[in-house]
Image 1 (tube, helix red, strand yellow):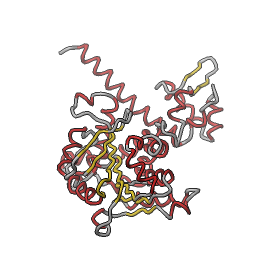
Image 2 (cartoon, rainbow, N blue to C red):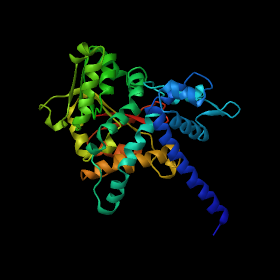
Image 3 (cartoon, helix red, strand yellow):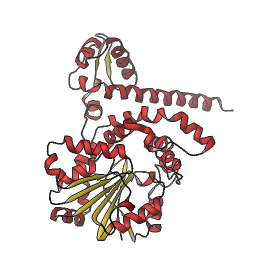
Image 4 (tube, rainbow, N blue to C red):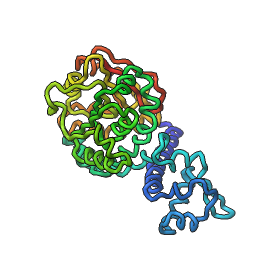
Length: 355
């Protein structure tokens, strides 16, 4: 046995456990507003941080020490003060932006809460249905994605689909399949005031969140004339209802019946229309996913994406499907063309799918 290899692996396990604890502390920083309280304020003592955030001093003190140990904060031992660097605040104290990473931390308790049930499913089969992740799960997914959807979808991502953009500008009908809390629908409805938008999701709790977001919007009266949300399956839509543009964002890999569902989506796509698919960015091989993002996605898969599909008797495609598998699914569903879109992202892949 190679003792150096044992030592190196021991250090890796400690490092991974430290990462898990850092993510947990990061969750606390997001949920309690600690990151926001420190952003742009320079060096602060623990008492000043606790006062700014309105939190219990002893908890704040220990949180600061842990975040400094993890490299999130800078510590000055001479004054026992802590600083959140601007570059770090840009990522973790920037709620509602397209570069906010704090939503990742909010997935931690959601996923770890079901870990015992997932472990049991390894023995007995089945999995954890989406409904059992609760409102926290819906809110975490929304926080994870909302900033990008609101600030990049219409203004940047859709530039890769000029024909779809032209249709939406002129006045079209659009469907967001698996709409979640409604961020895509609301963002596109604001960007294209001549078009009508429908968001559907099998999760009634998700649709309720989308309807709350619509009702709370400052422009809700105008949006409500062109936006509708429904907790139903595509098969339940009126016969013959079709759409010029359909989006499926971060949901194809979750499906219990992916090919049949994609066939239903194809039947709802008008001739000349486009289905825009957004999926987690993954390679076709394990080796290609051997990096931090790939490891994170495999974890998301086991504790969320794959297990909810298996819970419904589905294939459990998993978060890291990869472009080859996506292309196979589209062909099996009857689509003629699946084209990767040239949109730069570290975490997402984009496809235009046509009849």
